[in-house]
Length: 77
Image (cartoon, rainbow, N blue to C red; front, top):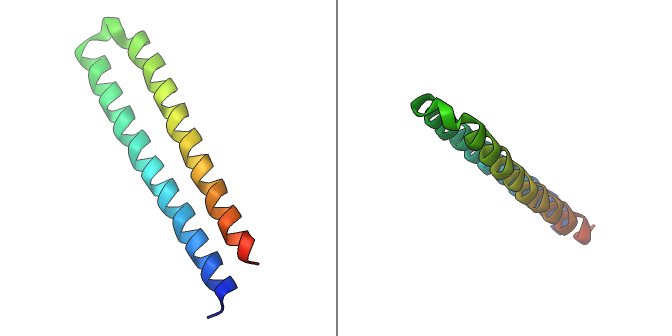
């Protein structure tokens, strides 16, 4: 394998791991929010707002990780 092929392969693995981690994190976040809303329905609005903010931060970090992976992969080419 050439160094370009290895760079593309590792960029793909890195982006995949970032998306996998984000999916697991948002899934765990949503499960905890639903459980909290079920236990205390009066606080559902506050829980939903906190969940949306946390999910946006997770997605932002994931997008940053994907961009870094792509930049590192394309730098070699």
